[in-house]
Image 1 (cartoon, helix red, strand yellow):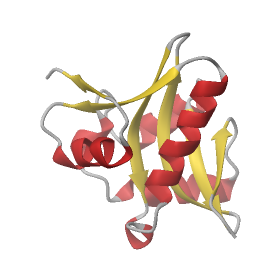
Image 2 (tube, one colour; image 1 turned 135 degrees about the vertical axis):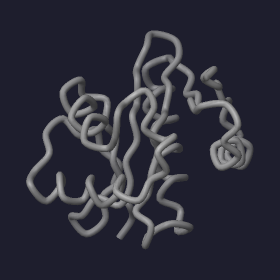
Image 3 (cartoon, one colour; image 1 turned 135 degrees about the horizontal axis):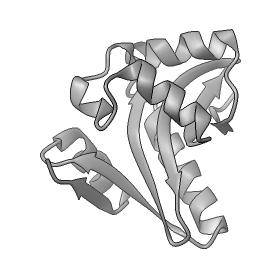
Length: 134
């Protein structure tokens, strides 16, 4: 069964629990400009900018997807620690690319300056990267 990618407009109690697990062990820099995981999750659910990967009814990864007319930005991408290195992040990025293309937009990753993990993912997937200044 593949990872199903979806825009999360509402989160069930199980989804909320999964999101806490996804972002629970994320590095602090990942949350900027938010104060932490709770503010990130609440804000993204309120403005319908949360995209998530689901497998067997559980969320394994999530990211913030900001949709603008010509460019969509994917940021705050995180996968549960026990699920990393299994293609979940790649699946989220690829699906976001498809969604952006269907809307006539280009997907770009968005990250703070100097974070090699995001730079490596962008290079691997051949996705442009926009860097936030500090």
